Image (cartoon, rainbow, N blue to C red; front, side, top):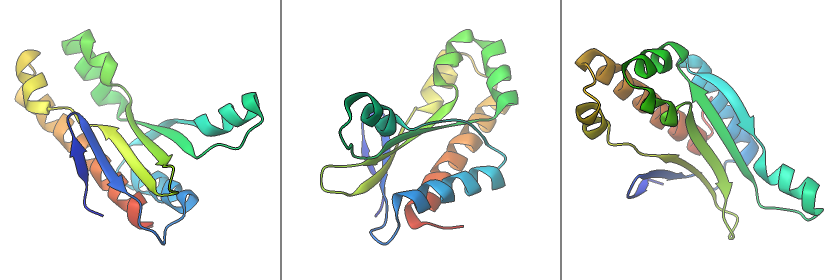
Length: 143
């Protein structure tokens, strides 16, 4: 179940014994414990079902945010707005396997390009670490 990575993507398989609902709840609880706010939860597959009338594989997008960090980053460079809030997608693939997927940004490269002060870079890295922790908790169904 170790994370698979493609360019710009961080992905973790949800353990077979963990339901998608339990994975989602574990992520909500871990985010709360790490002081990351769940600012949006988009039940994409349910919206598609409502439009098409056909059952869909689960796709839910969770958006987590550290509002103060977001504001501080945007104060440095408004381009940082494209990374806000941090998204983790819960996706059921065609074989029924659940995945947690997020964009994997090269923080060092972005920090250098945008002249990000070290203190902010450290805070960004801490949020990324928290997001990985949230994904791992979800994948294992940990409370």
